[in-house]
Amino acid sequence: MADLSINFAGIKSPNPFWVASAPPSNTAYQCHRAFEAGWGGVVWKTIGDPILNVSSRYSSHTINGTRMAGFNNIELISDRSIETNFREIKECAEAWPDRAVIASLMTDTRENWHEMMQRAVDSGAAGVELNFGCPHGMCERGMGSAVGQNPDVMETIVDWVMEVAQLPVIVKLTPNITDVTIPARAAKRAGANAISLINTINSITKVDLDRLIPEPYVDGKSAHGGYCGPAVKPIALNMLENCASDPEVNLPISGIGGISNWRDAAEFIALGSGSVQVCTAIMHYGFRIVEDMIEGLSDYLDSKGMHSITELQGKALKTVDRWENLNLNYKRIAAIDYDSCIGCNLCFVACEDGAHQAIALTDAAARGLGPGRLPGKPIPEIKETECVGCNLCSIVCPVDNCITMVDVDTGKDAMSWKNYQEGLNAGTISKIPAHH
Image (cartoon, rainbow, N blue to C red):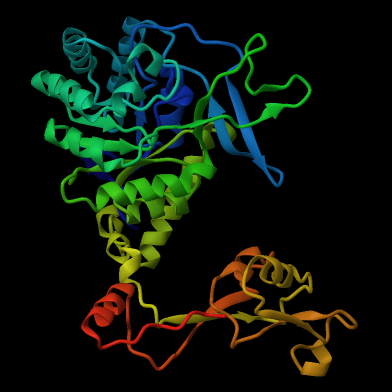
């Protein structure tokens, strides 16, 4: 059985699954419940001067009946006292010495950062996460993403923290920025031990069409909030890869953003995460989802002959390249398994109206394409010479593995756009004629 234990920038936990700094990590009660379920770590809900929250606070984006595919909140950091939070962190750290209890901090002046860091040490926390990502409420007070969007300011504050740091320091980055590697490099320059990303994305998820107010609304008004959940996973993976591939960052990364199951976690780890943090899935399904995450990731590693998390970590990074380096002479086309085709013809509609008109409707029996399970109903047939391998048909098909993409030997040597441009300039390649 694979070893799931990690040592993340000096923070040890029995598995890479951490509860993210959010409503599920607000109290000692929740922390105990999380550890009883099997979570390897808890990043405490951000501690700072206690604030007043509003009512209501959450809204969500439903996609084709899937609730909370995207989740929005306008909740701020902890509304409980600094003393209460650190007292409960101490309680949990002492009760669970093999788990990672991490304090999430947010404050303003150099003196206050120093004081908060000392409180974290006194509480027995395994590390601290600096919240420079919150996109609402706190940024209006000069904290949260207001810091994360200003690398110079962030570097100064991280430098203040590192002056007194006795624990591993993780800098949490905002995604509400053009290039996430710029603040990541600033964190590195200031001496941070690790980074975590992504925090939530600025959003408005819906408008109540009766009241004509966005959700959630507060006494007739609303505000932009932080977006998370499965819908943000592609954005998180992209920013993770950006930082993990950047030689100037070169820091351990705790991945966050839409992680809902072991497969999501494995993808984050394959792109460089050393630990993964989960929030929305817990709010949707509860702490016990970690049981399937642990079992699934362990089984996956076993199936690949890997014995630890480190053997998977970053293994997909080498396959991500610039578009200009992709092989223009590589080709794939669609292939249909007619034994599983249900004759919905969605692939035809999608290709005809939204892609390359490379699918025809034909009579199955007349063309010998299948067993005639759908008499009198036309079924799709790939026009192999027209298919450009865009993948759209396989994506829209409602039957798993009914449409697959298969390699086609073009008989041509590999050639990238970069090679093509170099050949044009050298006069060794002729200009490719436009497609009509």
